[in-house]
Length: 593
Image: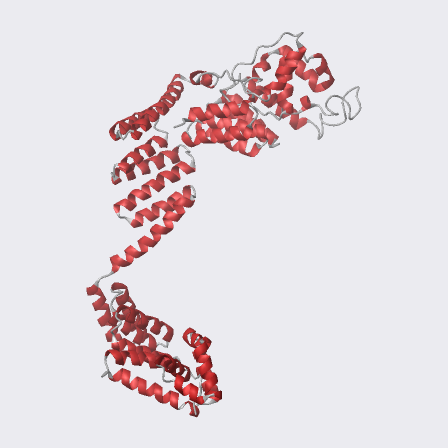
């Protein structure tokens, strides 16, 4: 597993090579591993500034400052980022705040001086009009002076190699001369330091990492001009491979630390190594050893939530759900207190939710996953949340079921029904259905009550559900037929009554209902044209009627009734054909006589 320090080293190498996008990616990975290390935010701020993204550079500088208010470079980073945003007054305040704590810091001093120059310089100063002794478009830089930028000194202060030159009075005198007259460069081309500055400003350099810059390369002899130029040219393509060891990387950073801060810093680095040992033990399934290593890492650095999250992973693997939940919750609290990445906090909450789910507490599991999404939205977590919400709904419905309470609610509904309190009866029957969703008689009662409040569609849904639960429930067929008659679906009503009679030929409700609807069909001639049209429209809305009318056999029979009656009568001997024709007649689609 790659450590945060390894990601940082890769980021430094990328930044030295001028690959700012790649550097930012590596620094981000380092932050994901250890979000409490201020140096990673400082380095990423430098990378963003070098890329020209001053806003993100400012955000990282502020994060760095929040993690370590006693880190001088944090103020330099913030001042340079604000300078890049052209917020000159804010930049001055940032530098002055840093100098109040670190009055001898060269980077802060030079950065403050430069931002004050930029603030006082008229618009377009130092960039237009050409060079002295040259036309507006003349000179080696086409009329532009790359050394005249207001933030040149701030850029140099942010670069680990260039900032060492700021203490050299002769070198600074050369820079001041170049800011006034870039043509003087031809006489200084033998100085590799000047060429490094030129390479940085032309390449858009805005500072480097805090701790992995390495020593500057040895200067070639002044007479060897070509060799110097060659080295400057290759400098932008290849990073310095002789990087300092990790222990030496942050020598500059630790210079302003108190003994207590130094010990804390060393403990943090040691904690990362101990965590790696714990990870190795976890992979070997030595869970007790892994827990001991993570506990040691926590003792060294209690501000890093990753160690607690790793403990939670061990507990989850060993199915110790309560311990896992406790470790996850503690990790999130530590993460919030120490500004850990939102993604890390979201992952810890997701694991916590999974532990609640394993315990069977769906309510806490769903609630915890929702909190995880608030910390950091994740598509996989969202899919898991939707699945669990559905499972919770089913579980809640199952937990709510109680036959005794269902019977109690049913009896209350019956009392309201007899008292003609239809709305209260519906409410009680609905409660009974929730308590016993597979009780067909309760749904039949609910259907009857819904009919009383004229909700025939709802009544039909309930009676169909009752028949799905009990296909032999004759009373339900009778009620279904009655509802279909009211809804002017006579063809369906006839079929419902007949199905009931097939089960119980002596059922009076089905027999009387069938006689009634048959009489209605036979007396259709006495209906008004409007009534016949309404009944036919109801029938045409039925997918079954539509299917019958599209049946080529039925279409031929209907044609034969007009052109070949004998063939039509022969076709009617077929039970299937006859039943379909009767449905068309019952629906008012066909008129007999």
